[in-house]
Amino acid sequence: MKKSTKVIIGVVIAAVLVCALALTYKFFGPSAQAGSKAYTLEVVDADGKTTSYEGTTDAEYLKEVMDELTENDEFTYEGTDSDYGIMINTINGVTADYNVDGAYWAIYVNGEYGQYGADTQPVADGDAFQFVYETAQ
Amino acid sequence: MGMMVALLEAGKFTLQAIPNVEVVTLLFIVFTASFGLKTILVSFAFTGLETIWWGINTWNVMYLYIWPLLIVYVYLTRKHASVWFYSISSCIFGLFFGALCSIPYFFIGGPHMMFTWWIAGIPYDILHGISNFAVCLVLYKPLMYACGHIRKLTREQTR
Image (cartoon, each protein chain N blue to C red):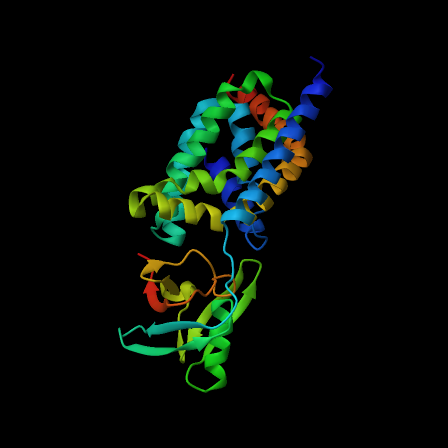
């Protein structure tokens, strides 16, 4: 087999794999749910103090729920946008700075460590979200 | 060996602001193609330095097997070494980087956690694969030339 044919086959295989992965993400990745949904949101700060919020929302993603809560002055947050989505730095005035002591705001969804950022985490009816101040070992 | 670790760290540091664009994969490919399996020791030194700098986390475990896996692959396929072969290989490595990294989550939270963790990172894996392809296509030959030159100089000095 000619070298150029091998190269073309290799590039085609790589392109097919890219398409297969994109389709896998489309079918199994996060999908938002429309309509009204009940949720609870807890903030566990550096001292272990828990603040709870609950309500119903039409928001599709967690960040929209957070924005709704800030409108009522119940909850504040600050974050920086990055290519990976929003990085939450401060919640209710408590700042987690990874560069200082390895601290970060972890997101838990229904008791499990969240796999998505706040702007890509879908909201489903009955979801329980937690923001927990954690430090890396 | 110290130079190789320094280059890996410098390369990683320089590109860390650009998500999923890295030269670490290419450097391990070039080092293995040039200096052989001893590059595995370099990968452990690199992981050790990264651990000192960033702290202990799940990714430390991933680094302990993912880089040696790449190095063994390059060593076993060194007879096919060419810019296109390694550009396509590094692309596929980038595409499945998340899948390979998700293995520890099988032991932490079971298959569901492993699967969801892998799925969440797929957009970044795709970017990683494409950028690995481009980086290798552009830099493989100059880096191989530089490593070949260093090997030649080292041989002359030890004679």
